[in-house]
Length: 387
Image 1 (cartoon, rainbow, N blue to C red):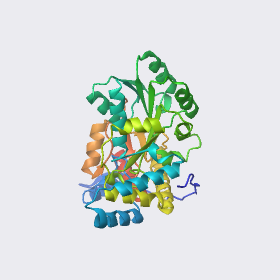
Image 2: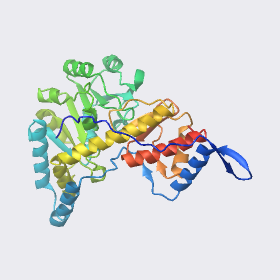
Image 3: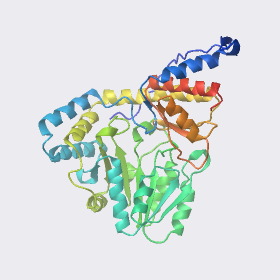
C-alpha cells in the first residue's frame, strides 16, 4: 500500500452566478442568483439521491475487487470462506509487519470492535471515551451493562487526551478506553505523543481500543501516527481496528480487521463469531490490497472533492473543522433537523446530529462531481437564507 500521496495543484472551474436581476411572476424583480438556485433545486427533484450521510466511498470498489468478488461467488458461493480468510489474514499480517495470529478479521471492523467490548465486559470493565465519537462502543457497552463515561472534546473539536487521562485516574478497576483516530464525526486527529505516552504508561488493566477506520486518509497529515508501532513493540494493552469500507469502497461487503499483540488477540478471538466473512468479501479485500492504482485514485478523488467542498464553505463563510477523513463537520447556521429535511426533499442525504453544539452538520465527501452538485445546493440554500 502506498504511504503518501503527493498533492498536485488542481484548478476548480465553478460555474459563476450572475449578480443581476431578472423578471419573475407578476412583474416582480428578484435576484438572478435566486432564480438560478430555484432552477437548480427544481432540477434536483428528478435526480437520484446523493448519499452523503454514512461516510461511504462513492467511487465503489475497484474493478479488480468486483471481478474477484464475482469469481468467488461463482466458484465458492456454496462454501465457507476459510481458505480465503487465512490468505487474507496472511496478506494483512505481511503488509503490517505482524504475525498472522495478531490479525482479527471481522464482518466489518464493527464486529471486531464488538468482540473487544464483549471481552472487556467479561472482565467487568468500565468504558471511557471522548464526546462526540463513533457511537458503536457506547451502544454495545451499555447493552452489556457497562458504565460509560465520556469527556467532551477540546478546542477545535480535538480529542482531549489530558482530560481523558485525568478522568481515567478516577475510575476504579478494569477500563476500556475507546479512541477513534481520526475521530468521527469531527475528522480531527489526536496528539500522537500524548496518546503514545499514555498507552506506554497506563496500568495493565487499562485496555485501549483505537479505531483507525480513516487511517489511509489521515496519513496525508504529517502529524498523524498510528499506534501500530506500539503493538509491534509488544504492548498488550492495545487493539487497533481498520476497515475496507472507506478507502477501498467496500462498505457493503463488510470486511474489517483488528491487530493486537498475540496474547491479546487470542483472548479477544474467543469472543468473536466464526464463519463471519463471505467468500465475496474476502476475495474483494485481497484484490483491493494489491490494487495500488485504485488506492491512489481513491485518495486523490477524496482530496479533490474535499477541496471543492471546503472552498465553497469558505466562500459562504461557513466554519468547518479541518478534516483528515472522507467527511467534513461544518456549520449550517440553522436547525439541523430542518436543514436535513430540506436537503432530503432535494434528494440529498446529509448527516444527523452528532455533536452537543447546535448548527453543525457532518457531510460525507463524495466524488468531485457529487460535491459540485452538493455545493450548488448549498449555494441555493444560502440564497434562501437557509444556511
